Structures are given as C-alpha cells and as structure tokens.
Length: 391
Image (tube, rainbow, N blue to C red; front, top):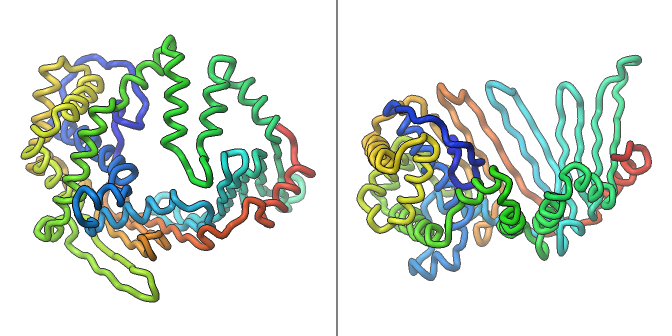
C-alpha cells in the first residue's frame, strides 16, 4: 500500500496549486494515510507487549498483532544470520543473505549483506568495527572471465568523506545520527531519528528541513494515535466476527516449541472496517484527526474547511468500499515463531492485477549467537583492505 507525502516518515513537498480530486483519488489518499498509520502501529505501538498487556489485561492474539510481534522481535536480537528470497512477475527470482552483530554502538558493530545479480554476479557489502568493505563480481571485457573487484574505507576515511560531501552544516548531524543507530546491542532507529531531529531543528533556515520537522507528530497526537492503535489493533481486531471478515482463512500449527500461523488478509474488508471504526470513534481522537486533515490540506492545497470536508468524504468512501477494490491484491501470510513470538520465518505472497504475483521469504538462524568478529566477515574485510581501492 502506498505511503503519503506529508505523512509520518515521508518527505515533505511544497504546497501544490489547488485542484479537485476524484472520489477514487480521495479514497486512495486516505487509504494511504491509513496504511502509514498501520505501519506505525505495527512497528511502534503494538510490539510493546508489556504495556499492551498491562493496559488491556490480556495479550492480543489476532494475526496482525502476532505478525507484528514476530517482526518486532527481530529488532530485539543482538545478532543473527538471515536469508531473504522471493520472486515477482517483473523481476524474477532474487535472493540475499548475511548477518549482523551489534555492539555498544554503531562503530563497534557488524553488518554483512550478500546477493547475486545476473548482470554482476555476487555483490557483498560489510560494516565491521567502523570500517566499510565492498566487492562486486563482473565479467572481464578483455577475457570474459569473472573478476572480483574490492573497495575499502576505514573509520577515518568514512568520517572525512561525510564531512567533505555533507559540508560543515550537515556533517555533525549525519555523523551523530549514524552513531545512534545502534545502542547497547540493539537497533535504535527511534533514537537515531531523535538525534537527527535534534540536529535538523538547528537548521531551520533550510526550508525542506523546516517543513519536514513541522510535519512530524507532536506529543499529543502521538498519545492519541497510541490510544487509537491500542483500541483498534488490541481490542477491536480480537472480535471473532471482525476476524472472520478480515482474515477469512487462518490456521495455527504447533510443533517442537514453534508455532506456524498461516492466514489470508482481505485488504478490502480491512480498509472498510478501519474506515467504519474511525467514523464511529473519531470524536475520541480530535488531535489525531486534526493532524490527518492537515496532511490532506498540505498535500492537495485545500483551505482548512475544504480539507475537513474532503477528509470526511474520503473516510466515508473508505468505509463504504466506494473505491476500486479490484486493484487490491490478495495477501497470504505465513509466520513461524518460537517462545515470546520470536521470529523464525516470515513469508508474504501477494497476487493481483496491480501487483502481479510476488512472494518474499525471510528466515533467521543463529539468533543472538553471531560474533562481531565473525570469521567469514573478517576474512572478507581483510581481503577488501588488502586488494581493494580506497575511498
């Protein structure tokens, strides 16, 4: 589902000239806003199981919450190996694998990624103890043989390059944000975002940065959104009649300490349900409503009254299914998880006229058991340093 310019996590753009939208476009915009909010819920609100369980008195067990819990567990791993594979009608088959191991901060961590390309062969990228390595296989123009080219940058090279490229205005912001990505053995993207915001707010003379900062949720909006996410994803989706519409097929199989959950997600039913739920309960979320209307106003160049009216119209169309539901793909999800809903494998398949057929599969292994000084990565970095060009 598409994101929306002006919504959380999307870049801001100058206000466009005023124009009218078709009903379908209105529904698409609000559907996109809803999609962004769903992503926030899955990534930030719902995974906080301790708080959710304390507030609700039980642990939500609907497929969306279970899946988001499993996805959130990945961010809690200090290290793991991973494999990603899949295919689509447009790109064909693809695969990648690698590992990460997190130290006290970004520069004391390791991240390794490899993939294969029909055009270039194997490509590898590594970050280890503040240093960067890269390799790419390609056929020699002269001999036709496959050759591997390496590149390497030390910690000092990277800092100097950032200062040279970003300039004095941005270098400290970028470096501080990079340093904040890892915090005491865990990914800390929220902390990195806060670090970036803190630095960027000092650069308000830059128009784009000022607009981006003004588009973020303030504390009161965040609290109302947390309340909305808790009520909708934590309570409403637990109702059996709601689940029967949104998840027409769901099956759980337990084996050897793991659980495999397979379900279909009916996007049409989901969008209509969340639209109807909002209509019935929006008076509880005045700050959140004002924020969403503001995004629509700035996106489409409406006046305040026009944006308010068009937002209501769009939500009504969403709740009534007054949009091109045929463009929505079918979605099938398989999530395999262990104790505390720790992810083992996640597979998502979509099929539709707008998307074609596509599937992606993520598998994890050696969870919390990979060293920063992993032998494979260390050997790769040593070769990149000795044979590669320097940045």
